[in-house]
Amino acid sequence: MPESDTLVTISEEVSMKLYDILKTEIGSNAEIGRRFPAKGKSRTGQAVGKWRSQGVPEDIALLCHLSSNIPYIYNPADYGRNPENLSLVLTKPAHQ
Image 1 (tube, helix red, strand yellow):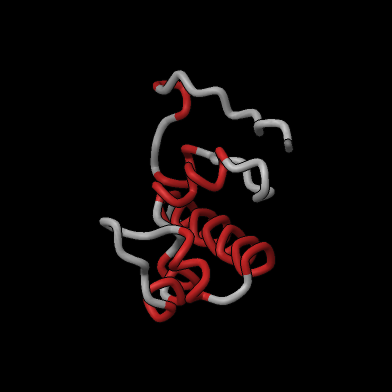
Image 2 (cartoon, rainbow, N blue to C red):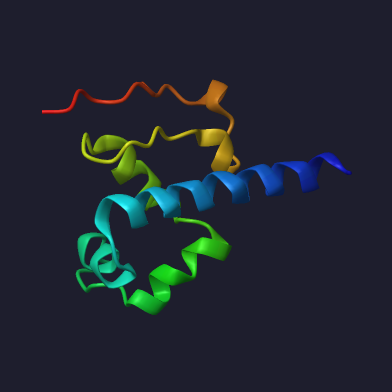
């Protein structure tokens, strides 16, 4: 399998995992859409449901990483970014 296909597969698996985490922690697609609005408006449950196959958007992944209530740690490589070029602290904030 070419390397690029491997990266896409890994990225899809990680995104699906985040989607599953959101479903477990929050519940319905509609509620996830309300908690992570786009341009000030709630996302539809149908739009959130597409994340299962298309992957959770990177901005949502970053917000999930910053939340102490969602057990997810952002990995820049999952979104095609070279972690060595970024100065990020990738430890999870303490749960308060």
